[in-house]
Structures are given as structure tokens and as C-alpha cells.
Length: 356
Image 1: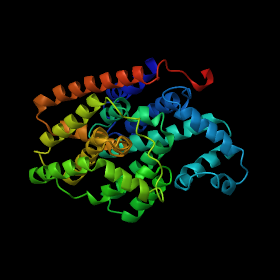
Image 2: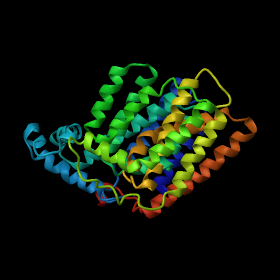
Image 3: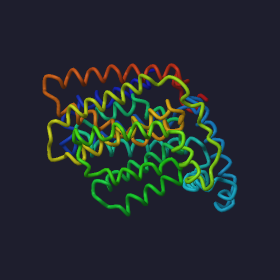
């Protein structure tokens, strides 16, 4: 448990030791270097037996990739929609050979994407990184390797939405698609920038959301046929067949705090609104699981990154008397969810790969 608590609390503890880590260049560099070492060491050198069996499967596939001398030969036996990931794993396998390098390199990519996103989009990067660890994004990253890499690529593309550089944005989303086909959903983000968050617009999304939820199964079936070149059997129907109400409550609560914070407009309104709409998409996608489209929970992870920036940004907009209460309240909820998921999903006890 200590390793996981270190991951969760080190961003906040280190921020108190380096109080000017957001503004002062030397402190900022020191903060992210120390935190990066902690994260990569714990995530990158973890046992392949932690969590689901996904990591074990990925490492076996990695060893198989290394047995092929030619990339074209390896790609010929793989799925066309995974060509990005398969090329990535083949290169690593040929360069290093040992599966631990696959886990370390992917961990570095996750850390760089999350740290960069928090640093550029959050008023409190330390709190954002804490939320990344505790509200289940980290635990998913430690299992779903292909999709997690696709998610990281999408998060790298996020800055091009703000800079209005469509070519670079869509190239990265296309690349992410060839790691995991679900990444195509992230393309919608580009068209949401500039849509100011207003009460009238928020009310409009209520009936739209209801229609999407009622058509959840049909939407997933259609997307499955279009983006898998003819369709494949839906295989995730058992992933989220029950539970998840606490996580759903957390998604909704973050949206409520964001709406309260939106009363105080500032020059960063376009970016704040974009984070809100991403979080709304996250909640809707998560809700779709209760309408039979269990696969949509996977889709919600692409948009969940917005929540780790939206929440601290929203808290910053609240009245000073309410900020501490809300921040501490979310800290307690997030830690409770994190510990519960660790206990119930084969993450304990933590062990390193050499103990596997």
C-alpha cells in the first residue's frame, strides 16, 4: 500500500516543500524531475501480475514481436487497426528485448502526458496529478496499455486545439486511432473550443444527452461497424455490468462544482468551457454503460483527463470561504475511491517486476 500512497500524496507533499513550483523555473524543474522519478520507478518497474491479466498478455505479445526480424512480417499477422501500437512494440522489442522496457517506456509516456497537461491547464498541477492517481486513470493506465498510449497521444494533441492548429491535432488523433480505435472520439474536442459555457447552452445539452443515452446501443453498434472496417463482435459487454455509482457520483459532482465556478468569468473562459464540455462527455459516456453500451466506459477515459484540471480550476473560482471545504471534501472522496479500487482489483500488495 505504501507505494500507492506515495504516488497519490507525493505531488501534494512535494508542492508544500517547493511552494513556488508553479512560477519559479528552478523549483518547477526540480518538482517535475523528482516527481517523475517517483512515478516512473513505481509504475514502470511494477510486477506484471498487478491488476488484470492485460499486462501479462502485453508482455507475452512483446516477446513474440521480438522474434520477427521484419516489421512487415509481424504486421501481417496483426489487426490493421493496431498498426501504430504493433509498430511501437516491435521497435522496442528489437531494441531491448526484455518486457520490462515496454512497461518503463509506456510509463514515461503516461507521465509526460499527464504532467504536461496538468502544468499547462491547471491552476494547481499538484492537485491535478493527485486526482490523476486517485480517480482511476492511473490504475487503468497500469492495465490497458494500448488504449492508455492512445489516450496519452490524444492529451498531447490537446494543446493544438487551444492553438487552433487542426492539421497537427488531427494527425495526432489519427495516430492514436492506430493504437486503439476508440481514440477517434477525441476528434470532437476540436469543434467544442470556443463554445462558451452558458445556462441556456447547458439546458440544451440535457435533452441531447437524454437522446444519446437512449440510443447508446445503436451508437456503439454503428461506430463499431464504421471504425473496424465492417464490424467485429462487441467484446466488452461484461466489463461494467454493475457498480460504478460512486464514480458516477464523482463525475456529476465535478460538473456541479464547475457550473458554480462558471459564474465568475475570466479571460480564460474558452479553455474553462472546453474542460467542462470534455467532462460532460466523460459523464455521458460513463452513463451509457447503464443503457447497455458497456464499452462506452472505455470512451469516457479519453475525456476524464479534463476533470483533473477542471476541478482545481473550478475550486479556484469559488468564494474563498468555500475553497478549502470543497478541496478537502474531494480529497477524502478521491482517496476513498482509490483505496477501494486497489483492494478490489488485485493491485495489492504492490510488488516489483523482479518479484513476479
